[in-house]
Length: 225
Image (cartoon, rainbow, N blue to C red; front, side, top):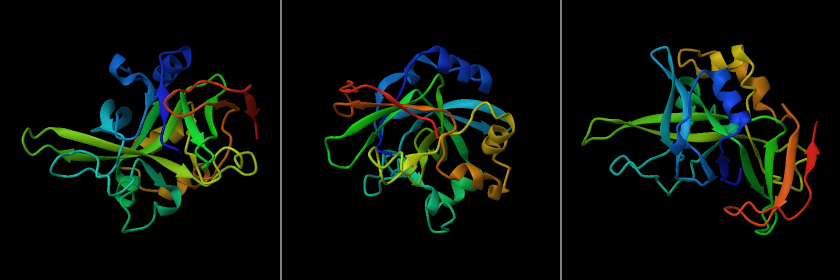
């Protein structure tokens, strides 16, 4: 994932909130969200489903609680989730989350070809991980999060972003979401089917001028399988 998504008020986002039993605040909405920004995460704590602010960067400097830019940790690769030395190892087992979104941007890697991707008629629930840090001055919790990325969907993804694609979960699958958000659910082998590139809903793809602007420069097309 190239590191850009947005979250706008829409019937699709309202449906996601209704299904998940959550409320998003106006501050969570943005037409352009870049790594290091504050995002909304959906997680569970003490049996309660919550929406919290989080820094979109999993590894924070423990002194400043700002993104540790020595490591690009706004994404967590699925093939590293079982690496015991990896930063995502423990969160994948104990602190999974959902990250609501409306669309995201992928780049081809040539610094000139970018596409906006939406799910046709649906909001997006990115599969994410989070860590909880404690502010040493205030004692308050500060959350940091990443989006899990999968291998690319080939050949449909070859001309969009040939390195990876974000994990998008079917938020209408109550059983899956309950397990994903349950910090006590440890049977992670059950998540193997969703950690494979797939089209859970038709994707509407639109070429845009550049990240941060989101201006369409060509007609949209659908990826359906």
